Length: 201
Image (tube, rainbow, N blue to C red; front, side):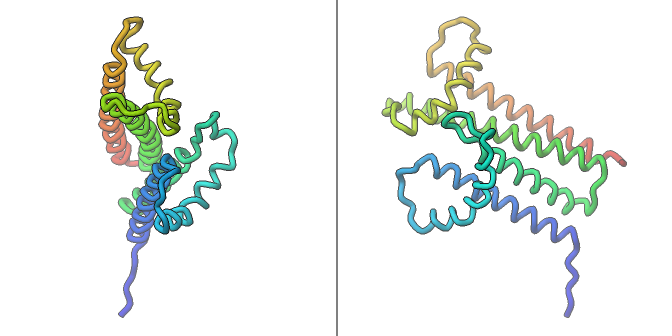
């Protein structure tokens, strides 16, 4: 018996594969923060699957700023764009101008939301460490501070102007502001995507 596989089915399969690979890349990036930990064979397998892709983006010096390496963010954004292309083709079977615009909006928001979520996670880690009175001067915490402190400084200035505020309170306020931006941005992006998808272009 012969089965016909439609193009939309193939695109949906590719979208699922891109989504799964994005998850693997994200896990790989998170594990790189804990370089001293031993994960054995599972980490070796994960590295063999993800490092060739990540290394392609690491070749570009412009994606590095001091000790910070932004190449994984760009790598994830590229995967997100591919995921969106496959998802749209899987849903509609074709690409219209409205769908292309919706796809661009979706890809842009995916990158922005990832960055917002990343900063929320960094600030949340810093708050938990302060609240638990943990040793916050180790290598890992210096990396967290490298990411979180510039954002915390700017958000605190925006929120409190020149008023002196408790450090923990400024972290919580910054997390709330970023979370609010993430929620509102998500709602606006979804609404814009729906509008563009319905355009008869």
